[in-house]
Image 1 (cartoon, rainbow, N blue to C red):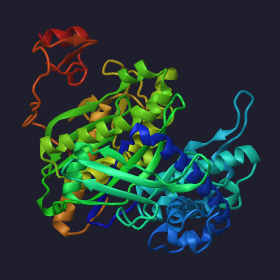
Image 2: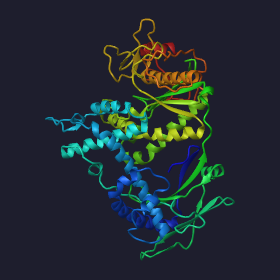
Image 3: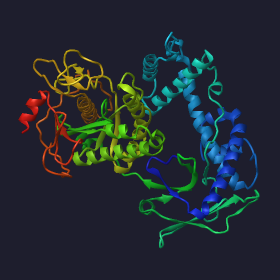
Image 4: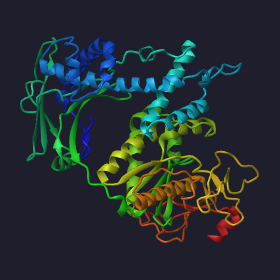
Length: 544
């Protein structure tokens, strides 16, 4: 669902009462069958959904086909809206397929060898996609979609020994696997012919009646309305915005049980974004190698503001590695919201009105992590969490009135943030015999500099430097321009410690616990710590 430039739709799901569960699930099952039957009839008309589209999706559908199972005009409109949205999404993917089809080549496939099967050559894919992206609008979301479609084409090649000639050959007929029915095609909550939905502000409840097939398959209205208690956040949003048509949806638990939930959809006004002329500080965020996120703030004078912040979920990954399905359904979404909220908190703490994040073009990483746990963590971080954080953070920045911008990740983790010179990374501060590509510690070998620190910390600083350069150039010339680490306008960042004290109070004892050569900030064990390039014995002695 999309809103205008000044509106943001928000959805909140609420479980239907127990007495309405069986009826709601029966309605969702019947509607899913109709939607899937409609998709079979609509699939040959996919090209018509690629044309310029205006208005609701159900209007496109009803102009092409009639209901496969007529049981009410407005009910069919709601089912047609669901089917139309699926077809529009497939039309977008077909447009992407037509964009990447000219660059499909056998070089994207790593040939089969004696001890390993054929697989995708991710390096070649990334290089070709980067070249293609230069001629297109710099949109990170479209980049990820193109990468996904290319890998789908490569999977097709591995199975059929050739690339698909058409999108319909690549993509199987889409199917709705879980119950989903939007009431956006109905006449509204009061005059609706498929549902009746009303809010009672005095009792903070909502009542829902809907048409459904009974146990014999006859369509009728549910006799008693389902009474739903409104959550506090929904009541608050309703005061700020306007109610949109709700969506009835099926949620399946890991054990196979199902429940019906109702999505409350509220459209709220976006706050006015601050003018670039008034922005003074930038928060730079890097996708970490050993941590999920690293963030550092800089002001417009290229002065670091505050300490770096590391969001590390490693311990949680290890404890939960055996419950991956629950992780996929619960933790990924929760962790994405947590990460986005933490970044917004850091923006508020440091007074940043512009948040610059490393581009999603690094979504697929290779060669990181050792062992099963490391590979699983990086797969989860890169393929699931990053996309979730990206989507959630973008709309939350709109709601918070913050500017959001992505920066090119090239050389951000192999450049010294103090002098701007290329630097190598090593496994640790004490292991400098050999530089490694994905080392966690960056060391500047410039004789006049010698800066060293966590590689993710350096990358976050460099992304903040790119954001500051973009900001100052825009304020000076009134023209937006993207910069790279090699551009002379990108100034080194300095650090005096001003504003470096953590504003959050300690949550535990004020003693300084030590572990593995690290001294932790009081009350923030394994969250905020000190670490030095000196030996462990020297470091602990100096810290008392």
